[in-house]
Image (cartoon, rainbow, N blue to C red; front, side):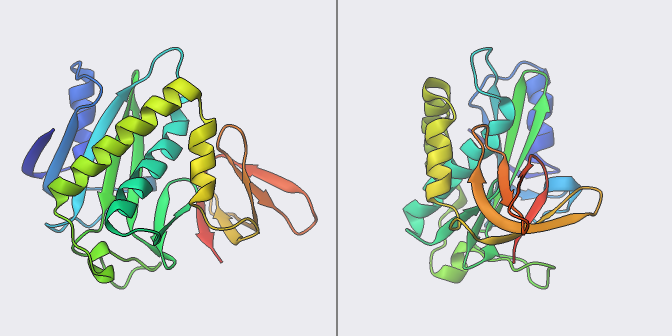
Length: 231
């Protein structure tokens, strides 16, 4: 586990290390990022005291689909957060963690050859204000774990869930995700990359982890990539 005072992006740094042959399980944490990003290239604020860390997984021929690591990362992070704030966090597809409807964290997966880089940004001590959607941090709920201690907890959780993902398949991960997610029938909006959107009710996950959206006409729509919002 490596820690640096400042870097542009831990994901970008680990991508370079992956190309140079870095082994699975390497973690890089920055006390501050200057070019952190979320999904679809959104900027991610990076004040000291929050968690900015990335790790890498080397895919094996026998592994489930690499994209399903998004669910593995989500359940591992929820597991880690619950150590410090039990029973408060809720998952939203594919890997957002919410507290009282406000976003606590971001997870970004990027593929580099046979490696998947998994980046975590978690609001521990601070959270931004005035954004399009509500955002929160653990400090706002009475706990402020040290980023290094939090990362140790997260790393242990992720290692455990990756082992289950490899040994048992996606099923147990999917089951845990559903148990920690908003209830079936929750109203959602799925916004596609082209700007179009679709409203429906949460109908669970497919066997490969895609979102099932139940539409007003009684049909179901399977979504593999979108921004999803609670209505």
